[in-house]
Image (cartoon, rainbow, N blue to C red; front, top):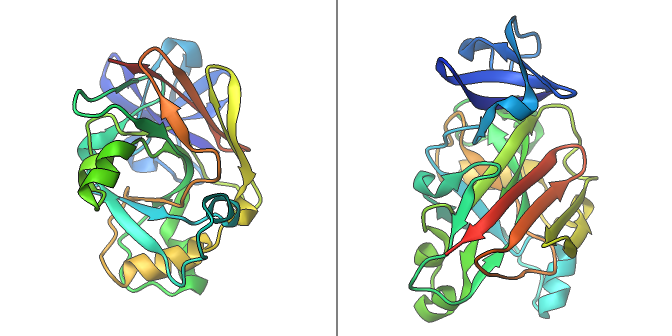
Length: 252
């Protein structure tokens, strides 16, 4: 099922997608396998919100073999992680704001796992019990600031630098999915999640032994080759097979 949060006349609402229809459900039924339908909307008529409001977004660097090869870098022995703040999160069709202090802003399409319940010191074989589903994420990065600072917090943390959505897909194998990104209609990134170095259960085990993950938190699993720059006026479409298409426009 493809779950989503959206705006209705009652404020923030919850539902799941069937074709071009959004079936509204109670908040308590969000991500439930058998939600009670309480309303119906046409998908083009609703404003889609980010699918969750995470307390943190945990991102993984250099997690695709083909990306490591592209960069001429060795395969890491353990996951390299960093954080994006919740204030960076924005939704499908929202704008990515190009910050004044940067002149080199990059796109990075990623598969993101959404946490379903509090996760602390989880074993990889139990990972499915803690993952609600998957969504599309764009790990927007001010690359010049990343190089200048020598660490990644400023470069990754601007408001709007974490578009995600539109949906959470609950029934998909995360390790066999085509993943790609278009910039102004041209394919710039194209790979498959089978190229991940560390798969989702390994990442959840590693991260949850460092920090407690709360319901709605997100693990962004890394980006494939082809990362490059965006400019104001550009249209970016991040796409993952079976999960969804996340579209945003860059503004100055």
